[in-house]
Image (tube, rainbow, N blue to C red; front, side, top):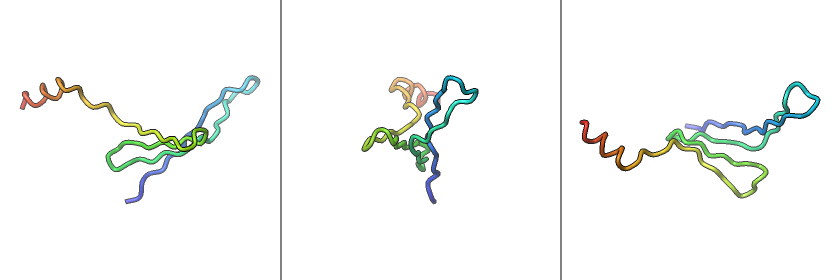
Length: 67
């Protein structure tokens, strides 16, 4: 299955314009686990990954006890 591709935009408010400018700033890919990789054009060689936070260890224990 092909990865979903997203465009990353920098939204800039410009004095004297009613609408902001949308500058393409990079690209993102949605991974099979739902996380997202971002590559930002202004930061060459640098990648980011967006993920939901993992539950704290004590939250994991509480969930397993409820079963």
